[in-house]
Image (cartoon, rainbow, N blue to C red):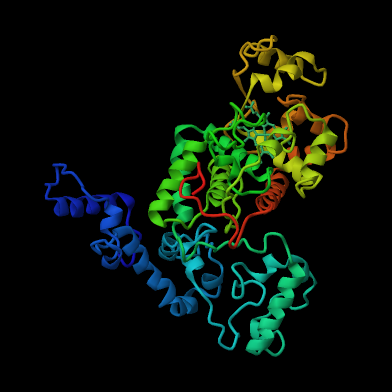
Length: 481
Ligand code: HEM
């Protein structure tokens, strides 16, 4: 157990034996468990029985290798083993790879790395720009422009001039001042101490939801977009209407259309059990959107967290064009995105979200019957399940990307090149206007799309978050506390 990652099956079987012992059952006989296993495994001072959770215990034992024996391993395997957490290739130790996997270091959200804190010492082993010694993320990522001008990119901390505690503090204050961004209060490790398993919990719920119905990943991503565009990413969209409160759910862009709220509820109730009143619904939505994209084959990015939930919603804004309608022309789209601080490039990349999910007939009827900038075969095929007359078959669905509707890729742009964009607002991105060349680029270069999409998602997610003492952490995403 202290040497290998225990296979899930083995952990499960051993836990079953422990549970049967506790509740007095035999191996092949089920007895009622009166208290959840999660609770039983909590420390005694937190109301549990202090029984070891085997998977966590296994991880903790493996973590000892990473911390206690790290230096010995360093001398055997070289520097990369300590700094490069993504070890691949035949020359690397399979056992070490397994240790890193158990610590989550094969992903960018390693619970182990996120829980570490730095002791600077004399600073001769700390890479000034690349180690996350001062902030939650390396300074090179945090201050890319200053980094690109630096003449000492690979220096260790000790070689960056004369460092006293005071000068470090002054320099960091200056860096933070120079950076001054709206997302200054969001960070990658906001929950690493307060709720270290939040990322894992969100992912597992999204994973089973997407396995049941791949479209739900698309629906969650869209929820995030519709939340962020109305007064920032503050979970306002998640609030239910009450007799005395009008939320955003019935606004034109959302009514009978947005979906996925049950998955957010499910995540919230699991996260509340894990760490009550700590994680906001707005953050859950941000993380779940990223996970949805990844699970459907799209790119990964580190989600910054620390958002808080609104106590209000804004029906009027949601209902009056802040969220662009599918009838938008190119200049409408450019303006609505610019109003959110998003560039034309961001807008074209984010529209690539229509590589997954579905739309209702009412959203594309006018396009398939009245427009000329549409492939005829495609229009006829769509007309079969979307009758011309308003009010008939309005809710019949069609996939937004006819090639790979459940896969997050650049086929959306390939479709636009052959006039097979489903929505009017899709095809205007490639109809002889200023965005044609970008569509062509993304259609040919999936990597360029991925990296612009990620940058734009991060930018959209930083939109006017509530932080500090603003708003609240809702207990239930559907209502204010
Ligand atoms: C550029 C302006 C945009 C317009 C005009 C637009 C419009 C629409 C419309 C009309 C639908 C179909 C809704 C229905 O018929 O019920 C839809 C679906 C969708 N949109 Fe957008 N959208 C835009 C941008 C975005 C962005 C920025 C994202 C994500 C970041 C996004 C993600 C999605 C997804 C994933 C779906 C499928 C949802 C599902 O299957 O449940 N859209 N969009």
